[in-house]
Image (cartoon, rainbow, N blue to C red):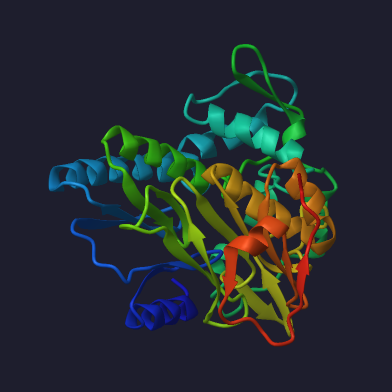
Length: 365
């Protein structure tokens, strides 16, 4: 876990907040009210810490829920990650080998992820592009803390970019088999799988008759019910310091996801390189510091936060409208804060820079 993130956690725990670190962004839940029954559990999956908090549940409900969620997230981590030897990694090998129209069986649990991603990719104009796994592997941002890390050679980057890997290179036939037309496609669902997993687990909590809960996946939060007799108060981290930039009250069944350039990054020759890549250039995007999205669908919120980050300050409104995303806050490269009108009504600023401008967009619907 990043040192600055750990310092951020310690600061806000001392101040009385329940908070968690994030690989891409960080948020908090205000915890001023003591609950009569609260149970907490943490799981490490998708490269981050996932905190589950249950309110007003019985001990038996909590134990059953935590056992189930641990089992499920272990499975998701194994089979939805391209870095393991699980089902997604095996599917990527078959795509690389069978790109001339040969049908590839799709594991049943990956099928909804793939189908949802194809639709989200289309709606986002490929700003959400989970087909660029080879490009992500090339950059090796999992080693961002290494002393000698540096960008890959441009020739290697362009070799992948020129092949334009996209989900449009894939087709699912009537037997739910995958047909690929591009060996440079390698699937990485890092910008969707976490949100989708949270959605599945919230449904399981409801089946256990748990009415009030928070799943905090490294700072991306989804809630059901409410926090005692009030809504949750979620904090959004400032992308350029360790303070909370703004807070937002989140109602039951809402999710807040943030993509930012401030967790996995390094400096090489006085230039900043972060982990969110532009599929068109093969390089980290340069037009945004962070994007926060609020939506009732955690998977859509997850994918949209990344897509709008890559789209940047010039294109985010069009893409958000296409993706049916109405609540957006984008902080551009200059630190100016772009908001949709409906998001402006929900957000409360706590610590913005005095030089930041607030730019409110037109309504997106």
